[in-house]
Image (cartoon, rainbow, N blue to C red; front, side):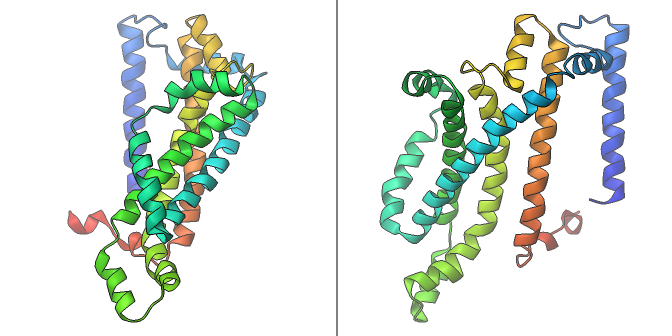
Length: 257
């Protein structure tokens, strides 16, 4: 990111904060609806004794579910890329289950698995694996047939085509799908912590909601945002190192403007 882009972003944030403070000061908006920045800072300070433990609890649920979902989703995606029969069996199932909201499964998870860490992790894992499975399935379907036919005509075996054509083609799409799944995992964590948990950021949000503590809710949302941005940045660093052979890094919108 260039310095000019960072400056423009900082200016936008400053303007937003000025409008926010002005609206709170001059229009006397209730803190229950739009709290002032200092109210959110006070809420963060009041949670200082529990926030570290809550972050660690949420990280344990999110990262465990994300890791399991990543393994399941990538396994399904790669199997669909390698086996046409597997794709014809699993692909329609993914298409059928994609519209089903994961949040609707919370009552079933509470009945099947009870309360505790395991159902929360599994809820995140299923959501992540569904996102990854669908994204990889679509990337496999969009592989130009001419690439595969050309390789087959040159005498390449199925394993060679999978290794030298299919995997390189879908790999950048897989990285993008992982970023989408990582962002979704934090939203799934909030839903998971509604399943009777007594710790974590989601639990703090539930308690603050009961007392109509809008500054506290926004403070927790900001913490979630920071954690999600950090995870996304880590994935982006890995993406840049693993996809240097592609032309993605050479594309620039400046050439189109």
